[in-house]
Amino acid sequence: MKTSPLAAARLVMFRDLRLAFRKPSQLLQPLIFFMIVATLFPLTLSPEMSRLRDAAPGVLWVGALLSSLLALEFLFREDAQDGTLEQFALSGQSLTWMLFAKTCVHWLLTGVPLAVSAPIAAMGLGVPAEAMWSMVASLALGGFALSLIGAISAGLTLGARRGGVLLSLLTLPLAVPILVFGADATNRAIAGDAIAPPMYMLGAIAVLGVTLAPLAAAAAVRIGLE
Amino acid sequence: MLNVSGLHLWRGDRHVLRDVSFAAQPGQCVLLTGKNGAGKTTLLRAVAGLLDPEAGEVSWRGNSARGARDEFHSELAYLGHEPPLKGDLSGRENLRFAIGIRRTVTPAEIHAALERTGAPAFADRAVRSLSAGQRRRVALAGVLLTGASLWLLDEPTTNLDTDGQRLVASLIEEQLGRGGIVVAAVHQVLDLSPDRLVSLELGAS
View 1 (cartoon, each protein chain N blue to C red):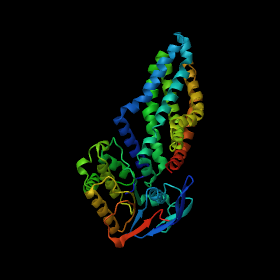
View 2 (cartoon, rainbow over the protein chains, first blue to last red):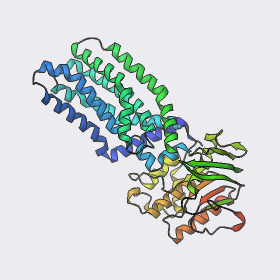
View 3 (cartoon, rainbow over the protein chains, first blue to last red):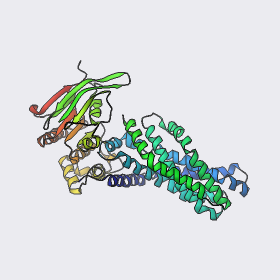
View 4 (cartoon, rainbow over the protein chains, first blue to last red):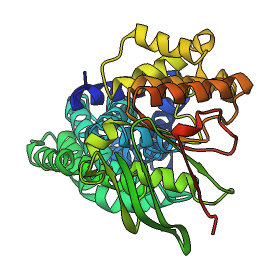
């Protein structure tokens, strides 16, 4: 019996999760990078909590964006090198669904851990405890949108040598709105204001990403395989 | 059933495939021969739909393969130069996944295919610890498990010992006996019934 597209996508997710847990170094790399950035940054500013608190949204979001970019390079590359993507493309299944599954795993393994560990870094930056939940929610939602946008760039740079630099150049401009609304949400959370407006914008970007990014990534991967 | 007509394909400024045409009926094997760089792999990839030729058409069961891509691909098994296996998974896990995304597969079926290719002894070891020949045997079990009517094999005997080369020949014979079609790029002679063979030498002009 032929496997349904959703069942195939679920298999891709489980396989990627299993592979990731067998190579924990790759899993930890973005997280460690994020913690280093968030820890070193306060050392360059004054120890005044109010100044650190002002800088916190920027530090956390730029750190999260750069960490996410680190992991994006591996999103499709290994599968392209060992012929797995070719097998995806020739399986008679929807490449779009399978790449969407891979993107969700990327978020689960980078975006979610970054969001969950962000309070540790945020405490050092003087973020008040009552702002933590909102900050985690904005980082998780923004991280999902980043993974979706990054999947397009990862697909487009598949055929390029030293695609890492190109991937950053392609992703960063597209990630600016996420950075702006995400930092705004964190800022508002710290100030005790409602975070709904920037969260709606992040949600809208994520919905747009879910709708378009897997299709665009699949088209880009097909070109990259040529 | 498989009809390739007038394929032209350039790679950069190299005209790799020049008006390549061939046809294969159920039970026939097309052996692609030619020097390194003659375009054997390129032709296999173009037939599979991984490369877009500048001119010409591949048709399968009378329909354009490009037009009915998913249907064509669900009847196709492609084995490239490198076996598409994940080093951190065992051979069995790799097959469970690779076949699982195509169709429902039972552990018994996987075991039977591994037995057929002489791979059960090392199928539970991480693929990265296997020799190139052992990996090839696991990958051949994968081809067998697809149940596909059309096999596209790129140097299927690479890294295999004499027994392994005989195994490839017998797997191809079985596939042809089932009414399947095989297109294989080869450097070594395969021991196949000549009445089922169609040879195509590339880059001969």
